[in-house]
Length: 458
Image (cartoon, rainbow, N blue to C red; front, top):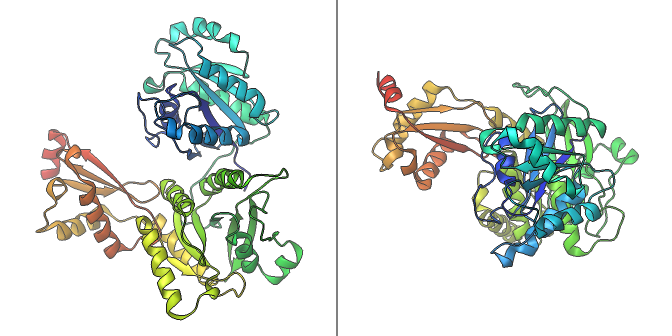
């Protein structure tokens, strides 16, 4: 599979980055707010529908915000995206004069981005297309970027022009326009991203799953030094006549990095690998406690709607009851993704690794599973009977959307009155009945117009 380019949206706080991200993605993935600095973490989404498919990154704002505690970290993550993007979309608020923070971003673009990486300057909040020419003239003085495009993301103005500009720049860089076909039968080789913190044994896992002939020709570099892997590496592995593509995520490039730089670089590679995968395998070191970074990586997989399997590597270093206790502790630390199976294994002895293929197949089937509306309604009537589920209990209709991951739509009288606890109850009962092991489930609640409600009752 060809490498997908990465497009990063960069700008000072409150220039409309998240609104633009959501418009390009086609759904509300990023939080939109008038409060500067709302976006703190890198948010990513794979854009397959574009003329040239790419991974889109939304970043926190570079510059002053009211939240000083997080400002440095947000800036660091934005710089990380800037340094590794193939194309940069620089957002500027067209309703304000160029600010000191805008100029900081311009200086950063000149100093920190990779050589030959193009910049598209997007002037946001242009609600009157007739004024585009004069607005562009006002911002020519910044003298940065290949092109200037005016948009109003909330009103979908200029978005097609921006899409065309992105495609044109990516083509100049050598990325190809392709037609992405979704295979409903999942006959294509599943892509499995092997992710985790540096030095947990990701490359050792991939090496252990290779055939002896593969390993003798092209082994992955393994070292006790955190961040040895330099680039994401695709490895084809065959098991019972089926091909699997393992993607080992990178740690470092050639220059020397400090410890915090290793984790930041790994985060970027992890984002890219997740977005290009079907199933994510999170590798943990069973000999150490689950870290905040482990939890964050698992959250990335869930947010992206991928299948998720937890690998407790180096389990051969723990025996007897201590092993059971350790696996129990891992489950407690990752309780927010308890749907994901935990597989104890060892890259050294290969213990448990052969089970991974069956798990991947099972997760892939769950991810593509579709329940008929009739079956869903019958199930729903049984599990809500006699339960104090408030607005959810009065649901008029339920159906499964065609989206990935499995997404269920509830039509209720007032969607604002639906509680998270009620949806959690539905999800637990749904998994008990239909499985969906290793797959996140999403819920969409919609208020039913009275006219539609009468039709449903009929």
